[in-house]
Amino acid sequence: MRLLHTMLRVGNLELSIQFYTEVLGMRLLRSKDFPEGRFTLAFLGYEDEANGTVLELTHNWDTAQYDLGNAYGHIAIEIDDIFACCNEVRQKGGKVVREPGPMKHGTTIIAFVEDPDGYKIEFIQKS
Image (cartoon, rainbow, N blue to C red; front, side, top):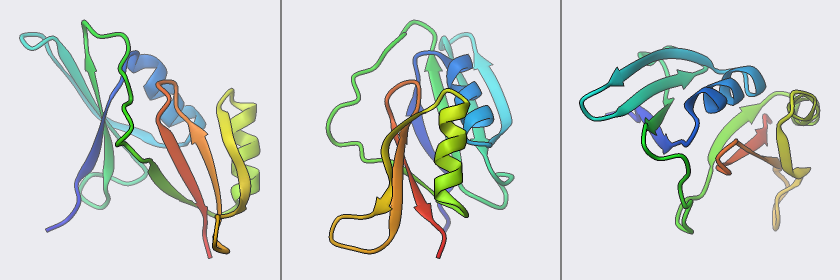
């Protein structure tokens, strides 16, 4: 077995694809409309689906916004230079919601950014 993808429901697919590709550097791997169901699926990642876990964005055409709830945690991405990456996110219009620094009760350097729908993405400094 292997982990294939994480799915997020998004209100504006174009804005979300732009964030994950232009701000976080993922590639749009594939996208498909399902007119009968009135939704679109888009798969993004750093590697091809055969080689890595990817992100599935689901856009239900009739839903512009979702309540994030309180059970969702975050997506985690390993970063070579967390300080430079956070600066780049800011320069590209992204939102850093927790500056790089040691995690609470630990030494691992982490930061958090937020996507256009408010989902949290944790950056973890590569050891």
